[in-house]
Image (cartoon, rainbow, N blue to C red; front, side, top):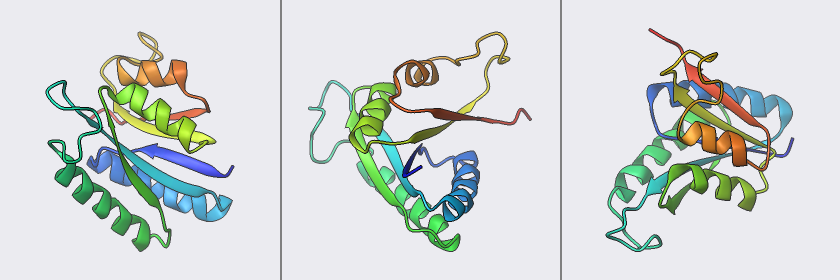
Length: 140
């Protein structure tokens, strides 16, 4: 496995999964890349230089880089601007030729009610060009 791509939103659960992935890539010698998909509304061009939310996304990815450094791993982190998260993730996975795409989600339904999840999860599971690891946040 050469490249692992993690969809990163900066939640506490994302941070836990990131720490675990850092330990995993140290053993597999894979490259770990993070991507945050910044949804750009229709009031802006999708490739606008400074869309709303870009500063917050940059700060969040900087924090993720510090987490990885504390685990002894150097990562690459990118912001992808897209109209929707799912297609943005799939496009980035294709572009970096990811061998694995990791994403987190909150469990809204029991897995047997909707095994592919809803929305972004369902889209990514159907269209990803590589295997997908879906990490559900534990129910509280």
